[in-house]
Length: 228
Image 1 (cartoon, rainbow, N blue to C red):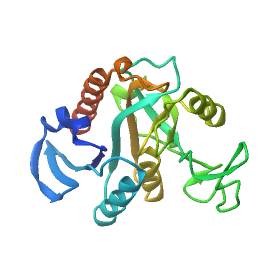
Image 2: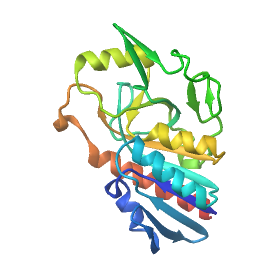
Image 3: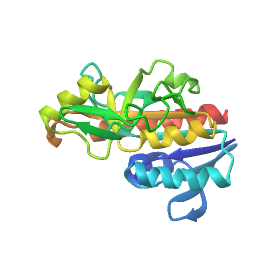
């Protein structure tokens, strides 16, 4: 089993890495680990979709992976999701890719720059239609995400993005990861732990510690299940 684990920062998955056997560094962003029967390539591309897309392209071009997991924290627009809880993002898009037309937003599909059903898109969305099933993930909500360059933190822009996309969560890497996996037909899972509600920025209301604790616990359960 060759597994690719992608996280924007080492900080987000450090507790998991401490449980794995380090083999060596392939390059500054990619390190190799093992756990029982699993070969794990851990990719830390950095924050944002540009770095993620570039490093994903490099990685999947030189090694065949049986599974890819994108793990990290995320903010949520959905107040029914609790801080620290985990979700599977099964639909994603780059919410800012398009043009403003007065008060309207036109996606690059609206602009006629791409067919909304060009592979791997389905009706203009990146959809993971067959995410892997793990015992610890069966009850996790499957949610819609958006991928952004600037996380939202003003009441007006938050209200607008909720109306426009009706998304549950936002991240800065998810769509880049999902595009690469769908294009290369790599089974994949985008696992996010909710660290905060998307609202006017107030980090005192966030719970990154709980989100990371639950994220790493679930990741380790997945790896143990794969290796059993």
